[in-house]
Every structure is written in structure tokens, then in C-alpha cells.
Length: 72
Image 1 (cartoon, helix red, strand yellow):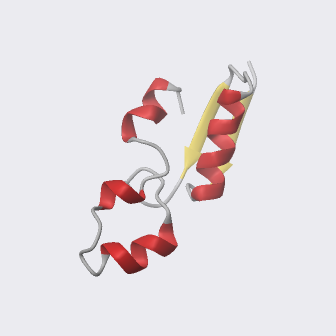
Image 2 (tube, rainbow, N blue to C red):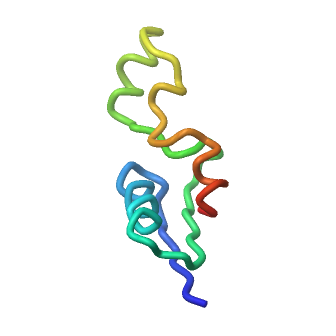
């Protein structure tokens, strides 16, 4: 079985993992990040979220359950 490891759970890392699934890759995908939260979009978080204009969940790349459903 083929295994892909993506180091960096950033927007780019999360998009790469999602694209692999969207394109039909059925092997193991590991997305490794330093933070416990699912991947989120960082620049808007540093603005709207910190000014209490947006909730954290609005900054997520994909909903948390997406990663479990897609085996990422």
C-alpha cells in the first residue's frame, strides 16, 4: 500500500490531502501539524477572529469530520 505523508497542516497541506482524495487516491494519507486544531486559514484568523468578528470554525479549511471521513 502506498502511504503519503504531508508535513505541515497549513492551507497548502490540507488542500494537497483533499486533492489527493478528490483525484481518487485511496492509500494512506498522514497530515502532520504542530497544532491540535484541524487546518485553518491563518491570515484571516489573525484579523477577524482576534477582533472577535468571526468564529474560529469559519477559518477552518474543511470541517473537522472531513479528515476522519476521508481517512486523512
